[in-house]
Image 1 (cartoon, one colour):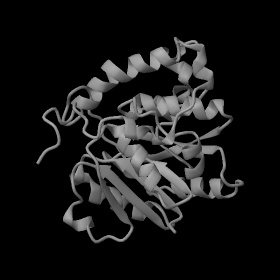
Image 2 (cartoon, rainbow, N blue to C red; image 1 turned 180 degrees about the vertical axis):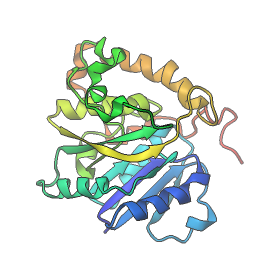
Image 3 (spheres, helix red, strand yellow; image 1 turned 90 degrees about the vertical axis):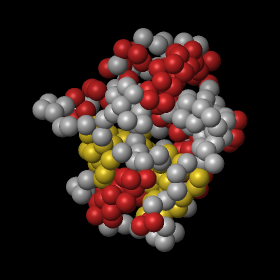
Length: 262
């Protein structure tokens, strides 16, 4: 069994070899890497024993949920395929912290990451930016506690993630779906430790590159859905079924408007 599993909704196969290579350098521990998405593995990874590929054409949250359920390790990390891990010891230190806890732990290691070019005095390097109340979209909602921390990519117990139902796949993307999961976990008593920067990622605003479907679903679907949930007092007792991914389309029409490609 691997020491930890990394899984992701994946649409950029041209990046996958570099991602895998960066993980090998960034950790001394045994790992598996799970790609879930529509496009096949590049030839360079097809015979790699600790790489899994699951083909799915659904929205990103559905793919993440499928990836979570496929993980073989007790500890999992969800991330993205538009970046690389940094060789700075952050990840192995985080895993060591979780392994000291009783299992399954509610402790969550939330990682900072760079998105786009590094800038001086980047607010992500502090703590305030990671509090939900720092962002007006969340602070305006009566049932989002301002002191809760964002958990956008993290190391967490697989069993605890499953107990909490994983992602609500009515959110199409993790940009808002991960915040909903973070609220539910912290309301359940989860302790979030904010760790250092562990990845460098690209930044594709608006419709740049392949980002259009994600941008549009974020603004037109996920943000209004989140506002509806957290304007309602029943949100404090909200539960999610781990199998809710089965209730959303298996082909995401924003990325594949003509249906599954032949």
